[in-house]
Image 1 (tube, rainbow, N blue to C red):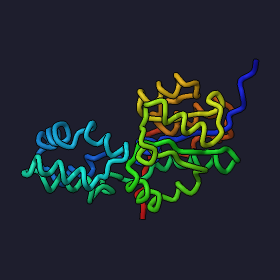
Image 2 (cartoon, rainbow, N blue to C red; image 1 turned 90 degrees about the vertical axis):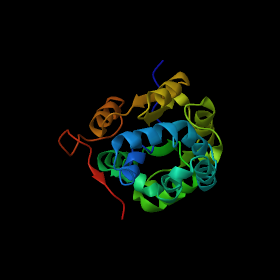
Image 3 (tube, one colour; image 1 turned 180 degrees about the vertical axis):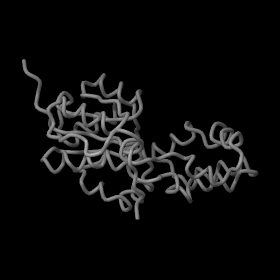
Amino acid sequence: MSEPEIAAVVFDIGGVLLDWDPRYLYRELFSDDAELDWFLGTICTRDWHRAHDLGADTETSCCELALRYPGYAAPIMAWSRRSEEMVAGQFDDTVEVLTELAGAGVRCLALSNMEPDKYELRRARFGFFGVLAGCVISGLEGVAKPEPEIFAILLARYGLAAAATVFIDDLAANVDAAAELGLIALKFTTAGQLRTDLRDLGLPLGRASRLPGAAARTASQ
């Protein structure tokens, strides 16, 4: 039996389309790298941030955490109030892949762990959101990758068959979860490699327009 024709390509946002890293902000707030590492590893941790990806209000969460660590109240509140300084810009080469696919008639979607309010801010900042045919955002759904429920939401909402859907993510746990559900799961490393992987799947992409190297990045206006 032949493989089904690919019906959609689904992009993660942070780490694939957007260059998001809390350190972009916190390097401005901490002069000591060791203290910065301690802060992100002890106070504003990944586990703490996951609640935001599940829909918790970021400002309220930061206020509660600041009460526990009053000596770090200012940098804690910056997580909410200066969140967009964590986004250095878009990855131009990956956005080029997205735009080229969409221009060729391929249905392009996004599945991302992100806070609802930050999603609205970023959707207004970055034009590539207008190229996407739809988005599934964890904070709006109350479930986050790598939980299988969020992939089920994606497939059901957009009428997709797992075997005909390509999913791209920079985190191995999310890629593995998608693969277990039968999606064509690609681990993102560089836009050049992604372009090659998608071409190998028969998708209508030309060769890279830039030489291999560091990803090009453009900040929003």
